[in-house]
Length: 171
Image (cartoon, rainbow, N blue to C red; front, side, top):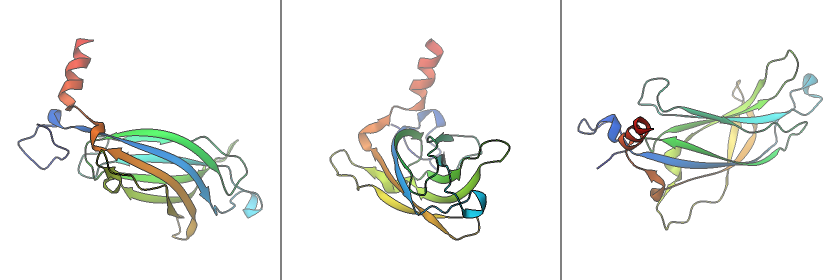
């Protein structure tokens, strides 16, 4: 018996199941130009952070990033990533960032926040096609959109955490 939540006091943390969520970052469009006062296209890359709202900071947190696409407002990545979450309602924050070389810090182009629960499918159920998500700048303005495919299947649930803890202690 295992659960994917923290609300049931009869289920210990070591008995929680782990869900695999696969993400394909496909492309982005209509990104604003940030370099040299808006004269030159940005060098975008994507940062993805998965977190669970019900747990303390640092627990079940994962972060991944794409490669940098140079001088483009329409980058194409087609890169695949896997995240592991306990709760189906985990959140993902997508940040499209302008890579800056030299002494400049990377600059945020736009963000989108997604609830992972919208992307869980039964084994035989067809998943949704890739979707476009609107990006919002730090000032609240439209900052383009990003195209993602996010899928998790019920048969991609891993055994309770206690199995992993036991197996690690055997190594």
